[in-house]
Length: 304
Image (tube, rainbow, N blue to C red; front, side):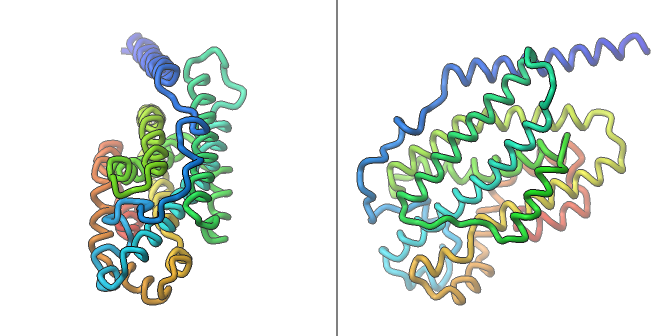
């Protein structure tokens, strides 16, 4: 039996290299430059939404029914910018996690080269989101100070499966939302282009994150798996609950206190979040990362 162990490890390494090589080829064949692909020059048409209205935190509430169409479009533009700002915040954490993971490793390894390619993608995405938010007429929606501090801690301490599964969580939730927005003609055309670019390029990132999560979990003991499951769930909670900044309502000209109350009780929005995470939860369960303590975080974030 001992003779088969090295062979299995070689096969896993070969599979990992094959995946990285395929992702590198895909990146060379299908990547975008947001500076030229996105229409930054045409003035914003304020009749357009910033996201599909069904994804608004107030959609389906009594307050939403009272809003004028102008108020609804302004709200979704502010919400879209808030989600984008959260994306920038997490992408900066992601870059640190990946850089730490591949620090001083073999640069001839396709996985190493793919990691740098992914970081380059994330840099472009962050600039794209920033410019998009500015064009939507929104301010910078920075997460709460406590969440920013926790993000710094995660960037310094998360590794292995916790790092890659956390990356996957953020990317999967955004992916489902943005697939809806990029097809919706009610959404501003430049926002649809931004979403399309992000969906195409993040599909490669998600593939790599899934492969790395599975690989890092091979042979892990129960105690480590239990700990990492909670670490990933905590990251998911703070990422998702930061996407809709409390200030979006005031900046859209709404009654902030009433909007917060109705958004918190909005069962439609909770159902949309759960639907966006169905595939993610199935994957985490298959990896043994949906433990009872972890489930508490996912339920509080309305992800399950």
